[in-house]
Length: 199
Image 1 (cartoon, rainbow, N blue to C red):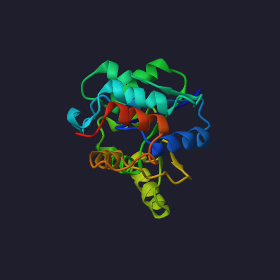
Image 2: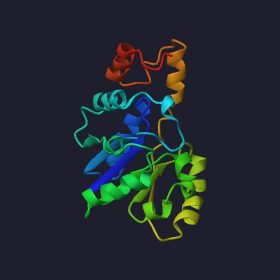
Image 3: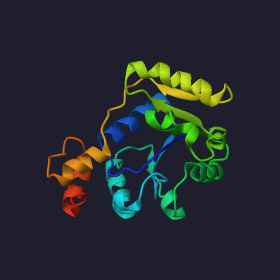
Image 4: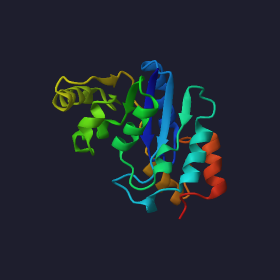
């Protein structure tokens, strides 16, 4: 099988995430896409995050109508700081004979050589990203040559991602601004009902 891995804080999940998931499912011909919320990202503090149950519930609502998408709590189960290397190692055991595609953002791709055990990750997955702007494609391609040194494949998507920021959404919610156009409807109502991100 061809299995995509799409991780992140999803704090909260928004329409940009949904559009990316749909685009990668099609462009990579994936049999399954795993959506994996991070427990505690190495570069963030737990105080910035909605709790695990709320982020999991929002993801389940956001992707409930997408057949090939599975929301996984693999990192919540592991606890502690959440390193992609540990997740990929665990997934490789679960999907021993399958092809794994790790989906990351443009900024993450361009700093991938700073990731914990990045070379070991590259030996296990096809690294995938999308350029926010057309003029960034050459920069990504050049960095890929440096990063992979011809030893691994990568995938640079032809579609432009919808640029929506979770931090922007949280800031607007704190100010009482309307974000309904940035979120899946059920996620928007969940956030309003639970009064998330308003403090």
